[in-house]
Image (cartoon, rainbow, N blue to C red; front, side, top):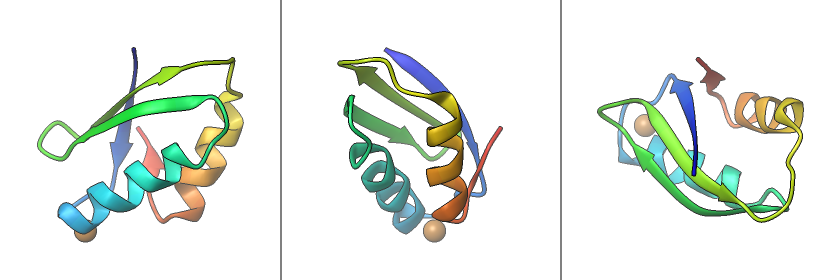
Length: 65
Ligand SMILES: [Cu+2]
């Protein structure tokens, strides 16, 4: 599993939004978001470009930490 630090999440709505954003990226599965830790974990079924993840997370209104 990979772990990302995500800044800007403050409630369960944010958690859902980040989860959905990651799940919509090809090659990412099994997304779990931990609000207290400010982390998202997921499995990659194929290599995913880190910049693409950064862009999508930013577009959703959050920042990679
Ligand atoms: Cu929120």
